[in-house]
Length: 333
Image (tube, rainbow, N blue to C red; front, side, top):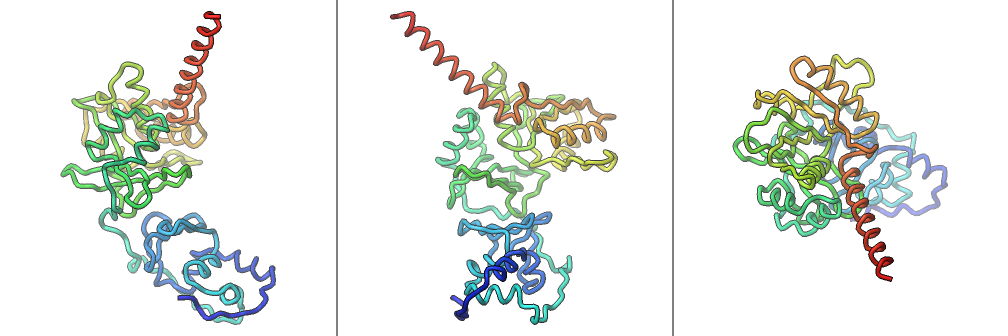
């Protein structure tokens, strides 16, 4: 329902001032009861659990739009007319109550809030194949139900299970050409997406993302290996301290994996080939080096990450095939 129409000219400077107010600040001030914490520095609203707020921005996933300010929230989500919304955000005569956000009253999910999904994976399969991932590996993951697809959006889900076979973790990535991706609310990062070796192996390969993990598995198979003989673990992002390494946080999924696999002695950190990846690897090497052989193994040839490296290999192969075809045509003339 639309709010009362408050007609009138709104000066551009007033609109600009209103747009300077971010949504988290507005909600803490006016609607603290609407805030629900659903992750580290990530919030949703009580009325709309698909409206996520993080890093100064918000996005309403069920409706497919977002913004970086509270003005758009009041107009597009709450239904206020523009003049009224601007007045709320700029009227200095309004007494703004001060609210804190007590930790005890903040909702935390005690289970994975898994969206409706399927394992047909039509769009997800197309997306992963376009990223160069082996169809055999995709089929294996779908069969094990570690890859699924959103019923509503066709996004690809990367799923992790606990020892009892219960779904505990899910990250999703958009398949519409955007870079949207995140962990589903309630995900337990102890059980991130992984491909575990058949039989005991003394090593584990660690990746920042599921896509990089699957890319490495594809490269391994293309070179005559078998990904099923290796431990491949994604950690859903890395911690890269800028200062001392002494307080470095080891990803909980890696800590859990190492504790449950005492035969593992070698840790290969297949992080991105950038400053964050290098610092993250150096930090883990510092804290794990006394117990494990830790090696930073970024993608070769200066590629940014393993999917970038995989796509470069595929494109090189296409160019090679085309060059051979052109040579045959020239020889036949």
